[in-house]
Length: 156
Ligand code: RB5
Image 1 (cartoon, rainbow, N blue to C red):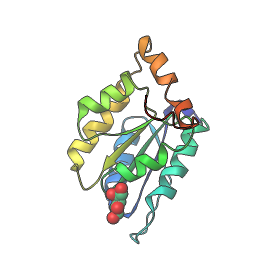
Image 2 (cartoon, protein in one colour):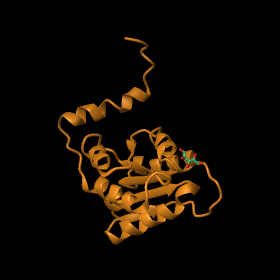
Image 3 (tube, protein in one colour):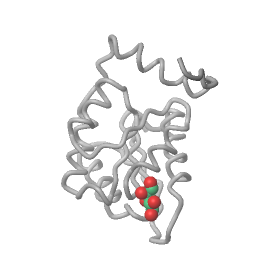
């Protein structure tokens, strides 16, 4: 097992075919997709899936995660509640590249009701092809995590 090539995928019921298409696309490009479902078309709760995928990334079991729901927004919010996760919703390749280069994102969220399959695959490719720039961005990224634990400072 090479954890650096493992990408966990999950979604809610709105995005199962797109998720499976992304998994096949990744496998064809030498990645190791870890598709944790679901496969049944019944309505499911995106927070459970987002959290499960995020835990696999936070633990180091998988290098990246790709998570989907109708908009991508709900599952992104759930993933970002897991310590160490930086997940962004993208519907364009520029943003997908930038969340790797500037934000060191380790998860990508997609909205299956927002993007078509062709664009979704391009967005995934842009995300995976980019690398974190480090430098001044490293200090900023380091400032993200502690904010979760701080009490609201109130108005400045
Ligand atoms: C499900 O109807 C929908 O709410 C969900 O897929 C997602 O878009 C939530 O953010």
